[in-house]
Amino acid sequence: MTEGTAHRGLAGGTRVIAVANQKGGVGKTTTVINLAACLAASHKSTLIVDIDPQCNATSGIGFEPQENPTLLEQLLDPQLTPNPIPHPTIPGLELLTGCPELVASEKVLSSRPDPAHSVARLLQRLPREGEGYSYIFLDCPPSLNLLTLNALSAATHLLVPVQAEYFALEGLTDILESFQFARENTNSELTLLGLVLTMVDIRTNLSQEVETELRKHYGNKVFRTTVPRNVRLSEAPSHGMPIILYDLWSRGAKAYMELTKEILNHGA
Image (cartoon, rainbow, N blue to C red; front, top):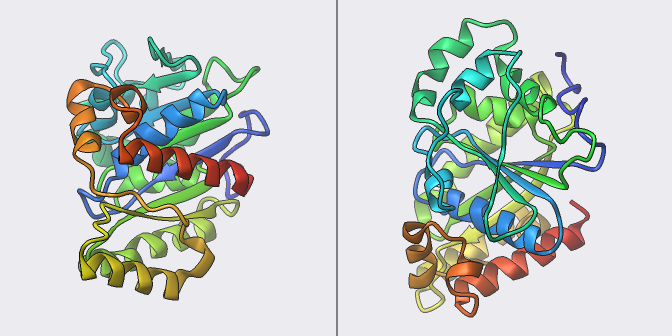
């Protein structure tokens, strides 16, 4: 697989969105789970692929990691067909579960030919190729490793959650450099979908200052919708539910529904 060919084999309209930030605890997995659920509820067939060894997207939506084969085995064996699991109560939402064994992926994938496109090849083997998904979300590990490069090499778009704190702004440079590296070396079609500000507390000067700086430097690449700090949003993953199932009327649910509208209106 060569530069710019990462998306062959997927339906032409499929948007593959890598959600990445090398800093942990910024709302990355929360964003994956809740955007995917909201899009599926908007009648957009959506798949989550959990490539984080912590498997938080898997547990946060109410599933256990699949075995025989694990996701790592599916990445390594080109003869295996991925088997996404449908969500029991949200039609159109499916999940390829993560596995803790992905922690060894750096070593085992790097020994294979063209290791940066392992995830792209996996997506091409999805059983729904003929029908296709409207959206595929890749939940990346909180580090700039080979799995994250794989996600960037397989994606059509990058979405970066940014926590409303000072050090989060400093960390943006690294993920955007990785974005540029992927565009130049493994996926010339990759586009920056945008930056979404998370864990915003409008009562604090810090949140307001971070938002001002983010919009000053990145302009319209920052989504208008911001995601607030919200207890119900934090509780939802422990119950294995996206926020629209756990508490539809919470501020967190309203924020992700608004962000979904922005993405749909964005044409992505």
